[in-house]
Structures are given as structure tokens and as C-alpha cells.
Length: 137
View 1 (cartoon, one colour):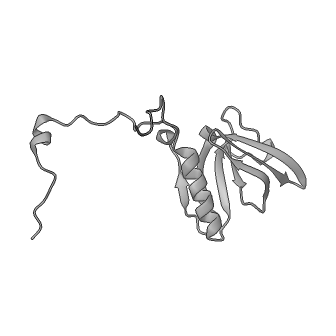
View 2 (cartoon, helix red, strand yellow):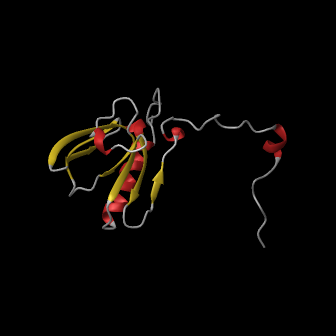
């Protein structure tokens, strides 16, 4: 009974990104993405790329058809008065923050992998015998 085990665990990054986007928006701030514009598959207006990165306003008022998917972020936005389609593979998202407060989250490669780097440490027999409980008086 219960849920059968899955072959692989999905990446945390899209879930963390959606949660931060919602939190920033709910607090009436403006979510901005920091994107590695040089990553494969990134489709952004190249004239706005600086030092290999681009910062994008991904508020609902600045975008049209915003889709924060598991594999990529897609939307249409105006750049210099012209509507442009934007496609950002999830692996190219470096972070999300609120323009007004600077609060947000920076992502690293471990957010893309299903397991923590190095896996779980194996406890020694000595650690297994030791209790993790403490007496509180």
C-alpha cells in the first residue's frame, strides 16, 4: 500500500523558485530573476545581457503568459517597447529576489540534483549506540 517508489526524484529548484515568486508577489514586491544568459537554451534579448547575466522582472504585471514550469520558465515581456518571447531553462536560473528589499534566494547546483552531494553519511557503529535523546530537568 502507499505510494510506489519513483525511479528518480525531481529537482527542488522549480519548487523553491515558485515559492519565492509567490512570497515576493504576496508581499507586494517585484520578483526579479538573475539568469546565466550564456547557458544553453536561454532565449533573451541579447542587448540586455551584461557580464554573461541578465536580470528580468518576472512580476505578473511585467509579463504575459508567465509559466514557471519544472523544466523552464517561459513568458512574453516588452523590451524597448517590443514584445519578446523569453525562454529560460531551469538550470540557467541563478537566483530570485525582491527588487525593493533585496530578499530572495540564490540557487546552486545541488538544487538541481535529487540527492545532496556525497549522499547520506554512513553512521559508525559507535554513533549508532549513542542516544540522540537528552535528559531535560
